[in-house]
Length: 378
Image (cartoon, rainbow, N blue to C red; front, side, top):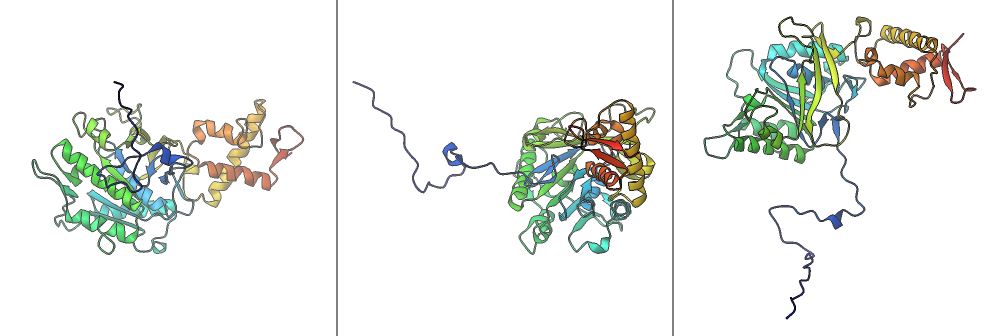
């Protein structure tokens, strides 16, 4: 007797509710995948949780306050990277007192050219440790031994429904949580999973970027390389001192590197070299005359134009052909961007400088050459 023929059972027109979601490949025909919205491309995505790990005192909190303010800066840049304009933000800085945050804020707005009077209520906000010594409980997710964790009143005041939760009520696009060790009261890996799931669900529901700061240990599940965090959060950045840092001599103690540790998200993965200068973080290798501000001042633009013109003469003096098309590898723009001494400069500022020189007639586009080239005016 022949085996019975097994026939496929096609889906009903209205499938029964299921506790899990099944994706059928046939349903994706002719559809493009959803694009990722980035607060900063390659670094801080909306609808996802990003972990920013680094040793205590390295500058993570300061960097995040700069991120909050940079979204409202006239140039729309953050360490040379484009940043979403006018993204409302809220942060919990559980390890910093309010007077410290106020002093940092004053330095940051001066750097970015932001007037606090231009910021409406809810544009940039945070909660820090009170100056008067009152008790401040920053716990967002509290867990009892052997029991599932529960969100606290503080979390509900942040993420509650409209009219109750600050981020929900103000439509925040960025939520910064500093840091994991003070915001999660848990004792095992299940509590870590539950806390991360709470954050991921809120980020996806409200289309906002959540950044969770973390001090990694050398070992154990709280380490940035520990598998519990890496299983829970799949987009992890690291802020660290460079390999040349010497803890004994203090050499390169003022330099920092922001890089991607692990990610499963597509797109660019920028590595940003920073340094401390006069109490401010800026792109590394920036000379004092070109200290990065947003936007560049008139004198800085003039200084930059002179440097670009000098660089053009230098390239021609070495016998190099300099093309006018900035997309070409032999263009002035591309040649300068390859040099470490120009990495501190935002690409848009460099392009604008070349355009100014051409507009003023200090640099001539030779269209008789094929392809067209650049040369200083005689």
